[in-house]
Image (tube, rainbow, N blue to C red; front, side, top):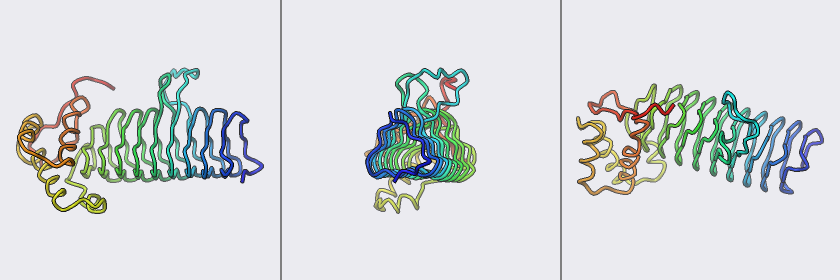
Length: 271
């Protein structure tokens, strides 16, 4: 199940049933779990751990050093990947930037052709990232988010769970959970289709709509909207929505063109 042209370090740890295609390179420090498929000319370099049943597509590169000017090649950092992920052709994922840090990909994610994850990115579970999305360092993606093709994401932002980002968008602010984001740091409303597909009840969806309207359509600024929300009992999903907003004061959140509310502005130049 290992092609004779594959180059595999004797210091790599590879389960017995792993398939490795022609010209693939597996370097020292790699740990590859059962059921994984490493296709032709893929490269796994450095401290990379793959769980079970992952597919690494043609020409993908996992674990390369961060694209940071002056990066110290002696820094020991890693890439940790869970189970059941698919990385299509030419996906690139870089390891952590600082000593002992990691880039992390969870379980059952689907990264399409040409996706790039920069250093210290964190991807939860059941995330879909379409062709040629580019994620800068330290981006966090919560579970079941969907990122459209060609979208680009600034460093240090967070993308909430069940959020959907339209293709070709440019994002530099946090994207709240459950919403649809587009263009440059804008939201258009709830990701209604995604919420239905997730099996959320109509009552939960209605409450999320009320939460969205309070934040973006009430005429209150963010602080006032959060204070108003605190006076009401909400479902766990709506509470998560408001907690996400409250925790975004440093980075800021996407705004709505139809909103009279102010977005949270960053309090420091963290970039």
